[in-house]
Image 1 (cartoon, one colour):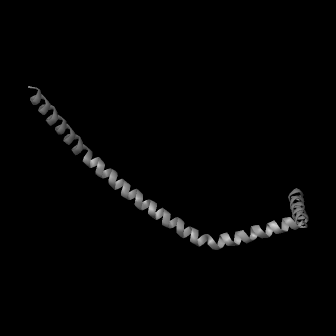
Image 2 (image 1 turned 180 degrees about the horizontal axis):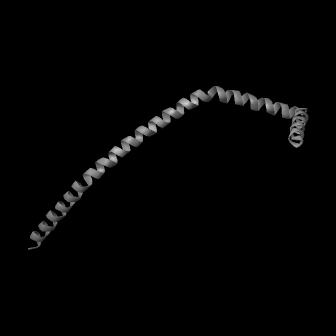
Image 3 (image 1 turned 90 degrees about the vertical axis):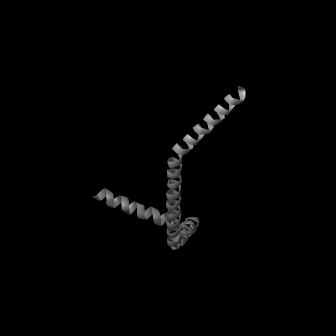
Length: 97
């Protein structure tokens, strides 16, 4: 327990000594000021994230629907291509005769 207490005392003394430097105090003020600004902006940022997630969810649902449509139409399209190929093939054979 003495070691932990001594470490804490040393940290406090070190922080106090570092605050004697004008540049350190100035930097600390800037950091604390920015922190306050970021905290004030937090609700707006959360709202923007929710909107983005909502838009992403809509896009995923839309894309999934399109994929389902393509999957349903693929057998139809394959059959159509085969029929077209056969028709062209038979036409070519008739023209060659």
